[in-house]
Image (cartoon, rainbow, N blue to C red):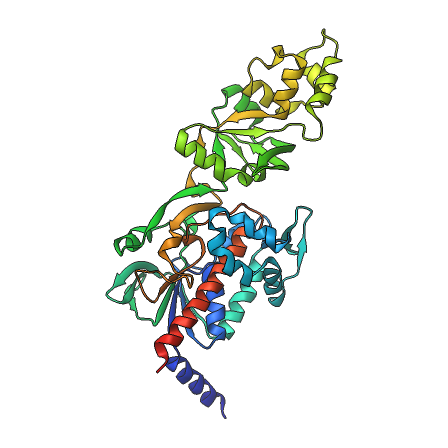
Length: 420
């Protein structure tokens, strides 16, 4: 058989295979494309941006956290109220499966001291290049600069630089992302399109975000950008150690993101919430109190605090800022403030700068196969769905897992549709 004959045969086979359109070229969409391509389905991925997976590439600039090494039973608990719905998808793609997926692309990984798993190269571009090459080898077509505008009858309508394009498909996967980092493509422009078709959607809220704090001008000027290290906070009944950063507007960083969801919800519902931080997690109230009590009364507050507790700089500044009369507190009251300092929050930072978003297509609007109940043949996956998770590799793991689960649902749908 000549090369021309082989290409003609492949083209004929692709033409007769089921045709699937995937709208959105992020991790969820690309994972679905791979599974469908391996099953012999003719797959075309459409993305509004000039290139795919831009948010993945941005995440990779600071070291791509692909998953977490903790036991799977623990990992499954990181998704809050959505955990039960996501269970099947996560069971079918565990953290170890994500590591194996990366290894299959020639990407070596390592586990950090926090249990988070990263590529040795600490960036996303090598993984994405290898992945796109593998998809091309499976016959997956990628079309960029195709902005989805909705449906025209049963066809998908795209706006392109060359004008409107209509696409007919046997099944459709929507993987358009949530509402964070809209400049990278996740702008939630799909919300009114699906709402008009009867898809129920929970309002979007920032997730893994910082918070505004009403700092005094003096504090903001002096400490903006200062890291607050070796501190702890309580999350879900656990003590979590880490660090955060003081910004001109408020606070942000890994420890803040870890407890973001309950703080955000409380703040949006009641207008009041406080970030409770332990500035000396390795010492008890009693030990701190005794050490403070031993200091000479003639010492200044700053010297007494530094000698007794080791706190100075931004930690001492936080005490003064959050408790204006802190210098006049007795030893035990001061120790209690150090162990549970309440930083009043004003509002979450804007969703456009949040790492991820909560809200999206309500989980009761899709079936276990990830098919939209009111739109047969249309599936959804990734951050379009109403789930959230803290940072730590959980976001990418769930995006890959839901993309894979949706692909399984699509294969079942296509099998029923094409069977005699």
